Length: 431
Ligand code: NDP
Ligand code: HSE
Image (cartoon, rainbow, N blue to C red; front, side, top):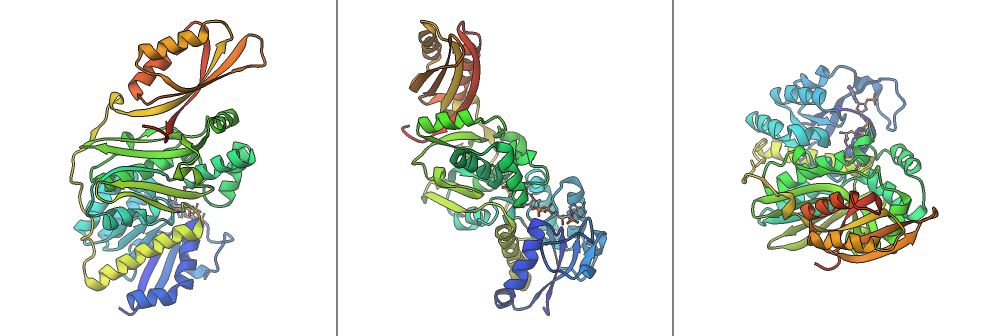
């Protein structure tokens, strides 16, 4: 091969990073693949936009077909985002025998299996390392590094924007909106940051991770999702008082073929290793039956870290081209999934209640817990400014999700309880 031609769909935060990494690491790429890599065309929405990268504007185009149908382009790098329109572009590229590298978790969480099948039918590679946890090589870690093991649990911080927000709110007392604006300016957030703060971005990544890690088709709808939009400064303060740090945690657990996958704001013991993962950094714990505990850590978002993952995928495609083995690496899921019911899911829970400050309220709350087989590990009561009202904050021992939901339902109707202010899952500490 004289050179490899790449077509870029998108030249924003990640696309600009890809151009920079290819230019600045050309020597290393030459050494690994034996020929230069050239960006032939880049699809954008606006040709004359000021860009964060020095690029000859003659290679910019508004017409996707100039890339998708160009017989000289070997690999299409999709870093434009969106789902339906982008899926059509990728189908066209694959049917025209182009290999794909994408950073698009929105697309892969929904249409991944379909696109992977199509790609392998056309002897094309479809790699998507950058779609989960930015610069951390977690997908290769699962698929290749831990290929021999049986993975039973993955727990991690897989969204940079929300970790950035929670870190700054906790450590600097800044407001949610202020920190979100900074995350957007730094290029961490999605075009619509509702997907970040609502937990959907993490849910998409957990669907991808658990599909690969557990070798079963986990759909986005299988992931229980709660974001951080309702987290308040008081919640963070109470968490601190109890010795916890709040993180948006993706959790995937498998017992036999029964699995639970969720994303929710979770209180972690301060000593928990994920508690010290700050700012836009991500980390994923992976537990394998043979290897035990492993942890993958690194920058989860941002231009150059994400571009590193994209360009590493490009190198993977090019090595396969040299060996003539493209389209052969995807492995179809081995197991049928069975989702756990709520009575099979166990954890501790944090709970804040506003109550009438009267004799007997705490004891009737205790009765509701014991009636449902639950109990407290920690409890505190604070008088509120208003007359005869108090706040009760507690952490339960491990209890089933079903049992805890029953407790909440009964507490909402209990005399003396005004309302349930917030609840969060708690991880770490004793069993
Ligand atoms: P940006 O919004 O910064 O860039 C998107 C690029 O695609 C822009 O160049 C834009 O053109 C172009 N584009 C978008 N829609 C169209 C369209 N309909 N037709 C033509 N061009 C289009 O996004 P990011 O670079 O941040 O993200 C790209 C992808 O990477 C997304 O899937 C995202 O989820 C994923 N990702 C992002 C990470 C990050 O840290 N930002 C990390 C990991 C994954 P123009 O420049 O003219 O507006
Ligand atoms: N918006 C995403 C995040 C980008 O903040 O993690 C990386 O996938």
